[in-house]
Image (cartoon, rainbow, N blue to C red):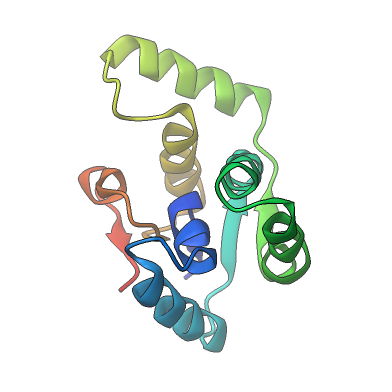
Amino acid sequence: MAVLVDTSGVYAGISSRDPNHDQAVASWERLLGGPEPLITHSLIEVESVALIQARIGVEAVEAFRDHILPLLEVVEVSRDHRRQALAAMVADRRRELSLVDRVSFALMRELGLREAFAFGRHFAHAGFDLVD
């Protein structure tokens, strides 16, 4: 079964200053050695680049582009996915779930994914398993 790779997993693996860095590096090593395809989506790609650029710099963005993105299957998020996630956000009025998280949850359900490489509690609260 494939694993969704979230921004929090990407960033923790890249940034030695992230409190989850050691766990993320160990998880990356297991994931890369395993049979599960690693999936992300276009909004996570954009969010990851913005976060890496702002907190670490363009050199780290280049490393992300050259060394991490080629390992991931990037699913393009459709306009319908974005609109449905936005409608859900407005309907339930919770500030703590981002549009990107909502798209991730919908995409995971659509693709039948159960596990996410993420450090946000939102995935577990939404009923998904987190990579150890």
